[in-house]
Length: 336
Image 1 (cartoon, rainbow, N blue to C red):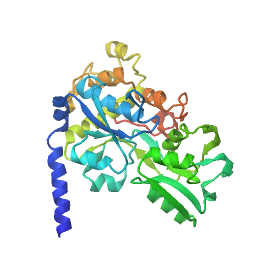
Image 2: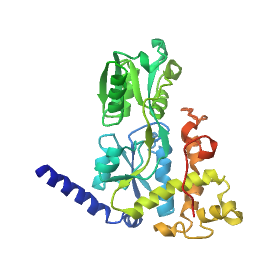
Image 3: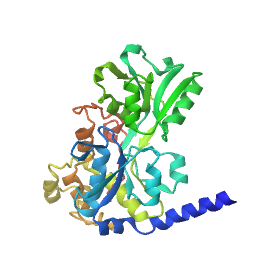
Image 4: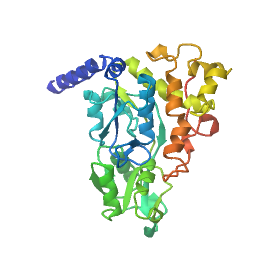
């Protein structure tokens, strides 16, 4: 009974906090507090001058552009995997944009809502080429480096058990600790989301000495997270994500958005950019909020290619993250 009371109290506290109205709070503060990774190349990483870059960082910037009119008005809060949910529940951050997997348990028991998927991923393995390993099925009795507080641990246990294999896991709190342990030889294999493995490989003295195996052992839909109980904020984040996806689908980019707003005859484009209708105002934003996002940050394709695409050190192909009409899974509900 005491446990139930404590759980009810915790949920009530989260709900009360959420109902305060995050959108109004962010507008009043004039700054968006966005939780990001402590350092994951291509997704969220600060340079020597403290400037944050990455795909998740760009989504934080997109939210700031939509809500505050300025993509620069973001306070980045670096969080490890163990800290991220507590920081969101407590109100330390307004949104979590930190390569976080959408799961049933997280969606139903933590008082949180996933606003969609901004990167479709899956858990994989990186090994030194010198091991001569070609498949995850050859990893029996291997020692693996993993980050604690992630879905990685359970996926790993399930996969090895299902295939009658054994393993030894060495866990660490941060990506940096995991990478350092792997590259120093403390473990045979590094396992994480494949996107994270490509990011980690860029940190190696000689990246060509390491390969990411083709095996993918899980589904890892990654996306932004908000607190439950605040539908207006939830809708805003959800439709900001939908806006950058729709913009790419319609061929609207940071380079041509001004022209499209003035001259496009496509009804959905005009609604997206605020030339007609009330798409932004319906969720408490300015009528041209989505236009500001695209102009200041870009569409989904620009965000992808600028941070993790084939012309970046990560060299990630669009794959599942291509648009639905180009063989991928990216799909936005209509702006109608």
